Amino acid sequence: MPMNQSFKNSLFPVLKKITDHYQTPFHIYDEAGIRKTGERLKEAFSGIDVFKEFYAVKALPNPKILKIMQSMGFGFDCSSITELQLCRTIGASADDIMLSSNNTSQEVFQAAAEDNGCILNLDDINLIDKVPHFPELISFRYNPGGRRTGNDIIGKPLEAKYGVSHEQIVGAYKKAKEKGATRFGIHTMVASNELNHQYMVQTAQMLLELVTTISAELDITFEFINIGGGMGIPYQPDIPGLDLESMGSEITELFDIFKKLHGYAPALFMESARCMTGPHGALVVTAINRKEIYRTYIGVDASMSALMRPALYGAYHHIDILGKEQSEKMETVDVVGSLCENNDKFAIQRNLPPAIDGDILIIHDTGAHGHAMGFNYNGSLRPKELLLATDGTTELIRREERAEDYFATLQFEPDHLTL
Ligand SMILES: *Cc1c(COP(=O)(O)O)cnc(C)c1O
Image (cartoon, rainbow, N blue to C red):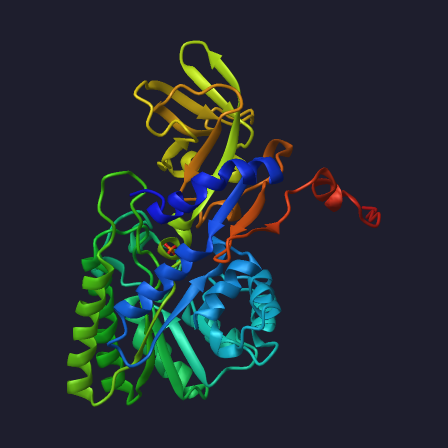
């Protein structure tokens, strides 16, 4: 079920009105769907004493969306200064922000310490001595190397630049303890777009076992384990989604066992982004040119700068043509943008109802890692973002980029160096 069906049901009947008013192209997000998924996530883990989602800001860094997350009691996973600023702008507190950066600079550590700080999740043992004011509460990102289970989309942990190795992990907490830390958490992220919930259960199990080992060696307890993001969504039609309810009950069982053995259980944190917002966004474009050469091309009024995933990963995004959903007639086309890059395609050799100029195309599942990944190559400007709100209104939540934005970095004080 690519694109949440209830989103489709609420969007398609009003889409003509929206495109008439705002003009394409735009990404549009479904508040009702995001809230429903958030509640489903909370419900799935309601058997655990403390559960908290830290939405990974990079996937959809729009303050309006972040406020929806905040209203559901969620925190935020950040990795850059601007992401920290974005969360603080909407009033997120220190407990609500987790900094999971890698290759972290001094500037990022300084920004993290401002405004009462945030939860620091360190990516390397060498960073321990580089944190300006070592905090009471510290977390490390664990890279299990050859031990991990999961899919390959994120890359093999042995080749991944992230995290503290298995051999280093006990030493990392020992050193942090010597630095004055008294409260501890642990983090990992070993999957991406994973649809098999077993991998997420195994991730929780791996961290709980690790917590047991580290606790025994260092006489410390853990406030939280953070199993990262990586829960997948079915981009293709007719494939089942991740079984969130089974994931919830199986992880809850692991926490119950841990609690029986140790007399306490840590909180469960996660940083889901794709599964939180992915299916609740769509890129809406207009067909502007139909071209028939060796293949048939449907040229639309947006390019890969509005949605990188197909070009970057060969990712599938389902496409509907408004009013032609029931069409019997189909043709095989490439749906393309206007960049001078042959991978500027939203779909390759896709079966679609015949499109003519002026048709509205809905590109599904752009609510995570969509607009945010965009870029300005070829002078392309990114589209606006809209929110389909639960009160039945539509709101502009980011305007489109304009030429003056593109040229803004060309306005600066002259700076010549004579050599
Ligand atoms: C990107 C990222 C996430 C979110 O991943 P999804 O696959 O979108 O859920 C979570 N945590 C970290 C550290 C990330 O880099």
